[in-house]
Length: 381
Image 1: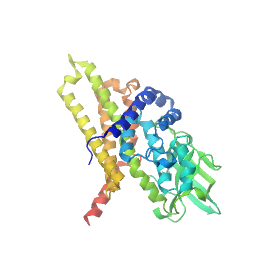
Image 2: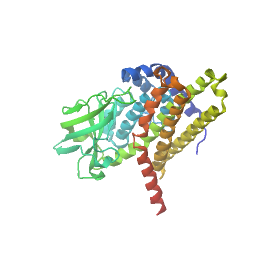
Image 3: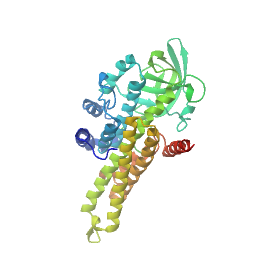
Image 4: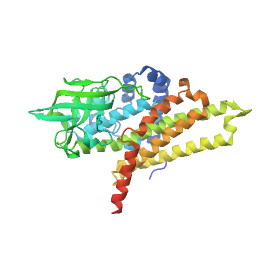
């Protein structure tokens, strides 16, 4: 159990914090307003090792731990949760190639993914298959050395602005055993993209549907064997849940810091806001919840690094608790700003909008409870 960071971890965190403060935070409001996807800035982050954080170093990765990644994504999210979250998705998709791909596949794609010369999207969700991911219907039919793909993915982060699609497709019968994973070039004939969705938040990354219409993808682009795709998707989501939790905590920390600064300046009834005991208690509760969530995140990340038997359950716990806490802390920070918190120029309302979706993606928080409950019941037998 680790309750303090060592010198290397502090250096990694501080590097990411400095990058967020200099390269991300000053532009976050404009990126949100203009729906700008900051690929150039993300590639700058990749030069510091953030394009392949837990990818092996023989293909250009940083070979760091999930614990390190949690520190990095929380730090990046202090500048912009949306940008940090997309870098985390890119890392998750890249990790699937690193963990389940052949040496040929790893060396084909990962050097450019780690530099973010190539950018990846993760394609699991479909119009009729969200929480019930094993019900996905996108079909890949074998035709010689290719698969012919037909179907649609929905809510795909970065779609239309990325190069590779790591997609779960049905190569066999119903259920999880019929799912395989393909790495698809986004420019493949028969691959098209819907309009950029109009969203409550996460505007600094595009979200589109991905359509496959008789798209031919080489069999050589399949990760592992046929029928292993659901396992690959779920393994990726353990880490993805930690990453998105870290992004929630980073955004919430910025919201808390903004609220503390505002309360020192704003006066009401002849006193500064931070002199009212009721508001002091609110601030204290926000900090306590945030620290508790961070501690659980670190516990889960360490368990995933060790491959503990309860790592999946702990990742689900951390995701449910951390993303709920992140949103609530940001929402309380907005309330402490009063009417000013509702104005875009203060940056609080953007954080609230960005963090709301974290309670839905990478598995809804209701599904996180289901995962935890099942693990508890299985363990009781």
